[in-house]
Length: 189
Image 1 (cartoon, rainbow, N blue to C red):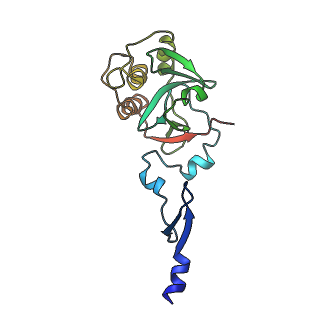
Image 2: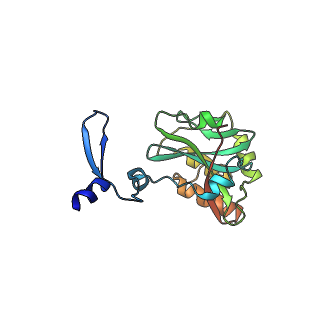
Image 3: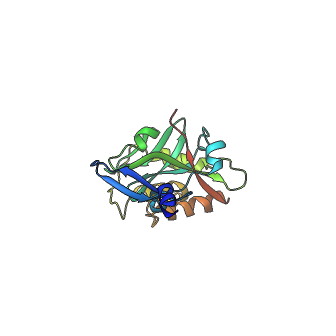
């Protein structure tokens, strides 16, 4: 009897070196990537409502780079203002925004209203971002980074203490005064 049960729960797989590995599996077993990942999970609303929804002009957006995030301001028509790793403020496409050696995936996360699921943005934030295009800053991953630039676009003060994505998100939510959810934007066609 136990032999028959073990046949159902033991699965032989191959690792990259082609050596056999015996692994116990159970129905509905969570995948290890789901347990280890700290990225936002795709919800049913992401798959249905936001499949091709473009962010609103002036939205704070971000992508995942290894263990950190990269943020910028969406300007419309697939244009994103961001502070690059060399300290230059520039307009890039979604492909260029997510194109980095440490990019985990090319998903871009956008803010939507928690209840209506409509994309959120702020025109003044976009205008502030556009006013900085072509300027340069002394880039520092901790003290003068893309999140500080993004928060500066939101609050209108580019020398600010908002050096982490969480703080930039907080400034965005205060500015638009709406409860926000962050969902994947399916920008690749």
